[in-house]
View (cartoon, rainbow, N blue to C red):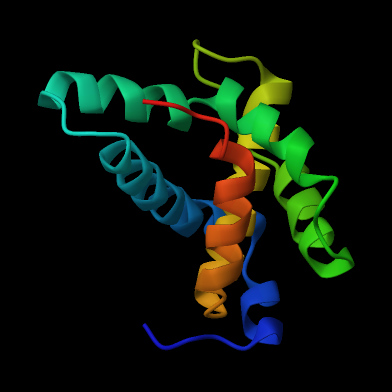
Length: 131
């Protein structure tokens, strides 16, 4: 897919941004997990699941609020306010909405080609993690 303009990306629903952003976020998680050292696949999986679960992303949402510009914060709010979301049994509705917001932001930034910004934000929310 070609890079979208900011206007084109903003026209997408928060759900669509989160749908795409889920895969973007997951790729960053997997890269981060691998950077923490080689492990058996079960260990890699467990580490990646811990970083991709709604509770982790909800905590990331709170951290991100302090460093986003106005445009990014708007995308985050749109993602949090997305309708039609059903939280899985492993999280509550508030956590799930915040997790969706983070995924929507990552989707938006990826679609407009802002990979460097995604890297900065991901490092900010995971920078204190050790192997």
